[in-house]
Length: 128
Image (cartoon, rainbow, N blue to C red; front, top):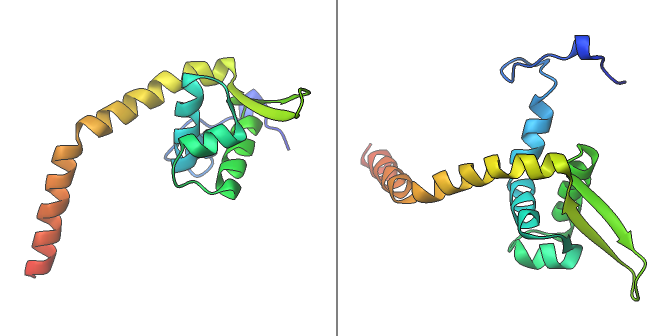
């Protein structure tokens, strides 16, 4: 059942928030990595799977289907020989990705502090 604009609730802290699910979709581990890879260039499914080390075929397929359904990714069946499917960002996906890349860059830049915090927490836990 589709919601009208008047019914949309935009507060991610509320259970009824209409954007919460979409936010979960784009920030999921495999979705985030797929979107980041597609920011580089369109990819075939196998290329994406090789680019995103550790993702299973099932999880990548589910993530791409969800991203396509939400309008972030476009899936195109190419009638070449052999036929193949190519994924690329939609205009909305192109607008989204810089924000995700900023998040990734921030986390990667903070890794020394994250690792130090983990070590301190682990040490405090074992000292109890």
